[in-house]
Length: 170
Image (cartoon, rainbow, N blue to C red; front, side, top):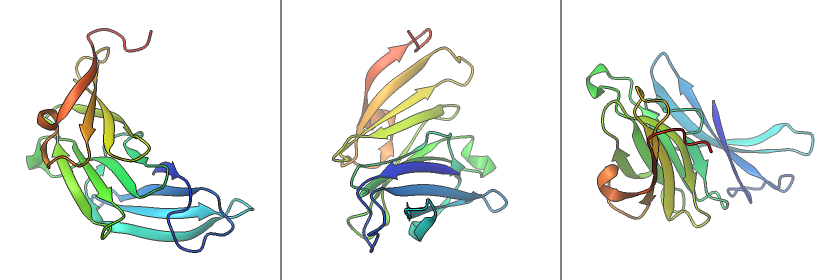
């Protein structure tokens, strides 16, 4: 289960909440994931659990592979397909909630690429993400992608912000 916070509420009548959340729940047996929005009551109980968008093939790419804008209108998430013929590609998908709640963009990463943290900026027009080679645990690359750009290969549509051959931690 992955969770991203979004505030204010994503719509509906959440008078008792000041923050809404987006969660990804995966059925590992059938390898599909569903996004849900929900709030918390004053007593901390979940309220208004609402499915978002379509069921997505695959499982979350990592524990930090879900992010939402502050207003909750854009959600980005990284998925790893379960099908053997996908050769371990991670897929970054963005959902624009202001339209029909469907997947509006999809970018693919090269095979054998580890997808780490995702982060949307406040208006949701840029997505930062971290990738690394799974065989080189001390190197990584931070890239930024325009969420209004076309679908396709993630590297072709993003630019490098930081590349490290050693530890990314000072």
